[in-house]
Length: 213
DNA sequence: AGTGCGATTGACT
DNA sequence: GTCAATCGCACTA
Image 1 (tube, chains in turn yellow, purple, brown):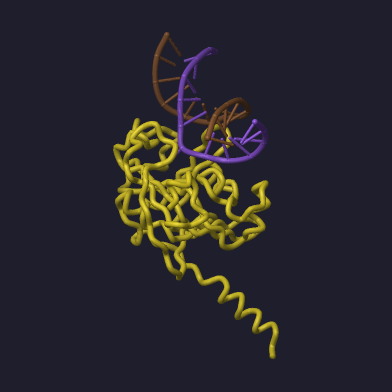
Image 2 (cartoon, rainbow, N blue to C red):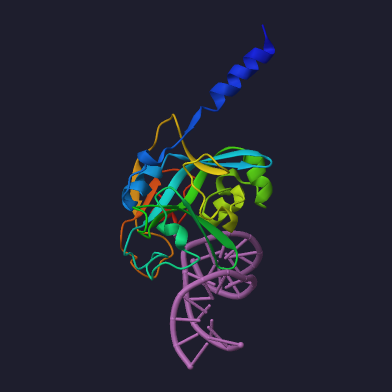
């Protein structure tokens, strides 16, 4: 028996193929995009290697939303939210956390989808090295944690996530669980709108327990 | 130029 | 469960 050949086959089956999401596949409306992205993948091409995480939690910040960063109009720091859908908007907050959004809607409309949690799939040792803790469950559970694990910062702001560059959105074969809805986390305005989407029962989802089942 | 405040996290009781 | 650290940005003067 050819051990190498067997090993290669096993590796291929262990990591199912991943393809780039095209812009045409992305729903134009923010809420639809937020729901659509649950179960898709985020891929980062880093110097150490490829990182893949399965998106298990998102939040929509649609046009006109008082809680959205685009609400008071376009500024130098939020301009990426106004790009055509599928571009990265990276924001820095609380003096410590970067957050990754996918721009939505038509060009010139300020709106986006916040990626809040990933299920680590590939490159886990590299993610663990960037984070200080070891528990797999906590590697990318939270918007600031996932950018930390993936090495995402303001240099990624404005990147086209449908181009297959250093950061891109992908789709893999495999089942997607039930997508549940809830209020968004950590807001002082528009806090009653059901614009958070997550995979029901996933241990990789963030937030208080009552917002995870 | 000064001020207030987060789409959070990690440490601690 | 509670709580403080931390800093870029928008806003006021």
